[in-house]
Image (cartoon, rainbow, N blue to C red; front, side):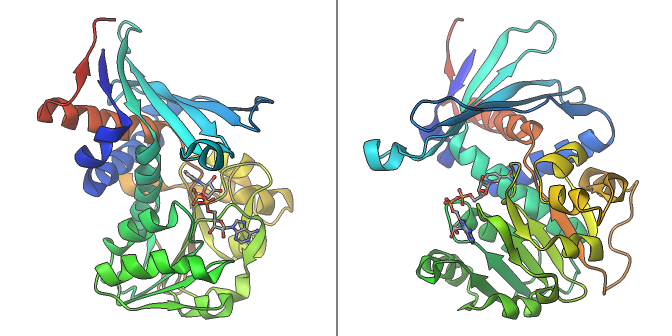
Length: 321
Ligand code: NAD
């Protein structure tokens, strides 16, 4: 069995490798060659932690495994550890023997950013110039870096509940040579692409704050009850997702479906667009919305990629198990 520790991931994994892995596994899911297992998520009654498993099997990539982990809200204040902790385990689908154990913390951020980047590649207008960011927490900088690589953006605008935190995003934009402006939510109407990545339980972005032709990637809602945008926006948009079952239960679409504004059948798989079996945007005025709920197969795909890189670089630790 191979081990790739968390502290090796940053030196090995690239945004491009994460993008390629996520795009390929979304395509495999839509082609029926890969599927995700039901998500387990438990409040364990200890340290206020939420712990769970996300797993799946990709027959086309011979990838079987799971990501185990969750959220320990007191880690940082008590122990100086990050609150999100996860580990990916890969198994040999032919024998069931463990193949690899891989640090999953940085990979989670990279695979989540890759998902919205894949949606921008396939759904945003080619001439998108203004990128709008909603949220400025841990994930947001990863999202911004990945999104900027997909179009010739000329400006980044950002909104966060606490505007002082936007300085992180301003730095990322400046590193990319782009101006950054902190704005009100109404000014999101100037954006051609909007990425939302918050842990809000109430709609932040109103339907009237999104202009025709915009692509919106809703990346924060991954749990029942969370919400980032007005459900009316989903009724107005063409809605895409990583996995429809998660979109309607734990994703942004849960609210629009519950209110009868859209039906499950209205939601398309992004993988089908990648495979060319579903159309991309049909006009420059269409609003496209990607509901990125985060699937186990994304974690496995990036873990496989980083194991390959670790073997190539000679940093994978081999244990007789
Ligand atoms: P974080 O705690 O570092 O940041 C949270 C962000 O949400 C901050 O910008 C904060 O200001 C904002 N926020 C919180 N409550 C809000 C409210 N009521 N109104 C407006 N803004 C609010 O979290 P993070 O690590 O950046 O993660 C952000 C979200 O992304 C979380 O909900 C997390 O579960 C989710 N996530 C999703 C995926 C996926 O695959 N879809 C993957 C990882 C994380």
